Length: 439
Image (cartoon, rainbow, N blue to C red; front, side, top):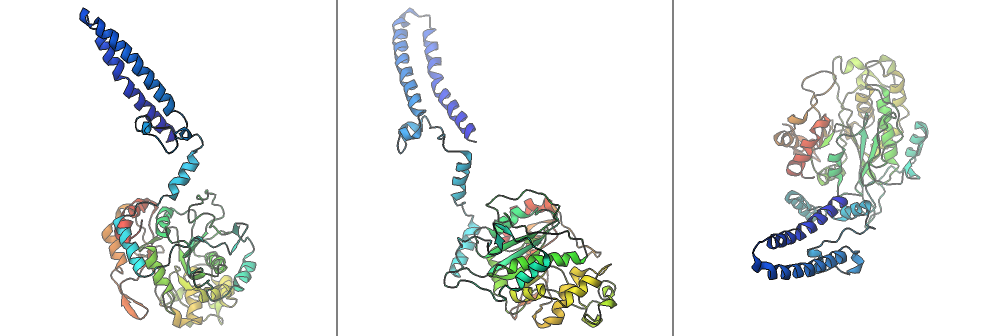
């Protein structure tokens, strides 16, 4: 880009000089004798003008330091970029310039300020409390669970201008995060109020995003995960354990690579942080093959058939319940030993565990919308053209349902939705500022 600008400037200089000799040549080519004196005068004037132009060009090509504060000559002969200003430095300068806010963003900002929304925290979005040398602690699962179990069960923040309670976003992915650009827009401007943790296949060798990304160096030491097996629950516990090491994390939400946010960050943050006593997890008794039929008699007497529950794996819990999950040495070992072969531990462990230990804390609903209407072992997947403003508004309005939030009925039931294919990203980036309030 710098080279292209210089070439354009040089072309501009040539365009200024070219018309003059063309005019002179035309005059000198005239056959009229009376023009001899005129031609001599023109030649003399042209030579003088050309000498001045060359001198000005040489001055304009000097370094900017020769003309402190700029010069009026730059209006006609723009100075080339200084040699010391590398592309990297120019990029850094651009990054420091705040983007021009859209009208929707200005409205959102005004609303946030009117509600005394916490200011952007310079400490950054991701805590280093759980890191050693800039990376996550790489130890065995057993040691990790012990380390997380020793962390405070209550949220510890500075108070009085110190760190604020944060929401931990736990991404359980197969490979990369195709929706990362949308999430970057979602998190933008809210550092210090969130933490990001990514668990992916250890065989994934994709490049780490740049330092400016919210996903930079946020992949925890991961292990292979197989669909429907206990390894998926182990990955969830691994994510929770790493997130518990940050004492400011208050709420924990599990997401996938096909998840998208339906609201802006302030809405999601307030919804979760201000939720009283309840956590967002499904836990219900389902007769039939896909519910009670998955129960293993060998799990009795620790887990009885009457205690067996089912629910979506996409949970949201508070710090206390997250600590209970990673310290569970009663029910998890039973699931690890017996929940195999069409048992699907990810849909039964947490619903059963919390249904036994904390039934009054469970809302029996998820804040992630998924379409199971067509039946089958997997939910519906949505392609690019299925993502429309009307569809997004319908999801934001509760997808045709209502729910309870802090004792009141509301249509804001789903904060996230899945499964969206990577080719739908461009549509989300296009509609997010208009429909979802960010971007």
